[in-house]
Image (tube, rainbow, N blue to C red; front, side):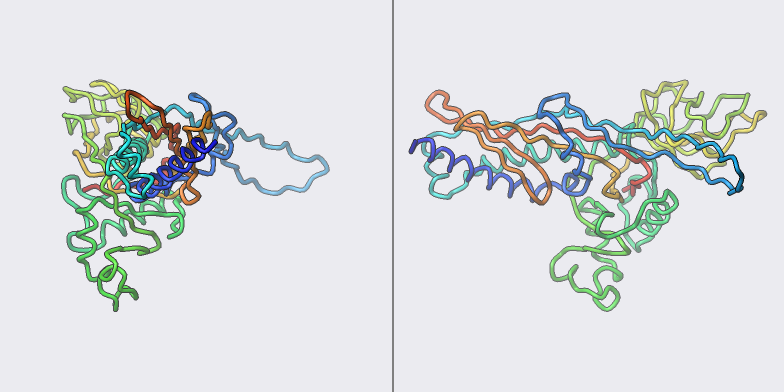
Length: 379
């Protein structure tokens, strides 16, 4: 019994240290909607949680009559969140390292293992934000870090977000910046000057915090989206295209654009994201076409936005994220749930060849629920 108790104490110590390292190195898992994980019915790979998306309801004039009008049926949709991501970060520790843990000294390898798993979760969520299932809202200039002279990129992003009906609320809406964008913003008077800002937190703490109704945070994991090789082509459809079309027949592309590429169409201010698997002759887009293409005119130029850093304005409910509580099946295993972010890690300890192997693992999944709740700010 004494041995089991000591093992449990060591395991819990490592789990606590691990969660602290994880919390310091990730952004998106703390931001996106993780409430859905309460609906998980089984901690197994492939389990699915469905997130309901309400259907639009039409308005009609009231016309009193002895015969009631027919009730208009609606069909809500749902987006599935599948627990299809199961990763571990294992490391070995000899008896000397074990004694250091008991003494309260954290081996650096423990933090590295946690950092690896944390980044894997964060990068998975970032991948959803800018792949073919991701956001179509786009402002800024590809290849140029935003906020070099003013806050125009932020005001443009907020304007576009509000046009897309994104709620702007500093509690649930976040501006995620890479280090270059944050450094530029911190030099702006509107951000750093307490007389203009009403706060000196940027200068004193090095944090931007709430600004223009959103909360700004920095992440070193902000990715770059790599655009396809061909940046200019055209629509090839002489019969015209109606509003609501999602498939574009194209020409002029010698190579396919990439899923997640942002395109614009001549005569249309809307930006579209390329979904599915684009080819040299066909592109599938979201949202559906906003401006009709005339019947007699089938050669509108398509421009693909170049490779860009994917700084992001995002509302919490844009992405649903679930991480499963994994079972403890022996004295060498422990589970800890972080009450702040909902992240759940399991630590397993096994003896192998005169040393102890430790493995943090996590089972999780996520889906983009509403594309309208995110805007890329290119850099």
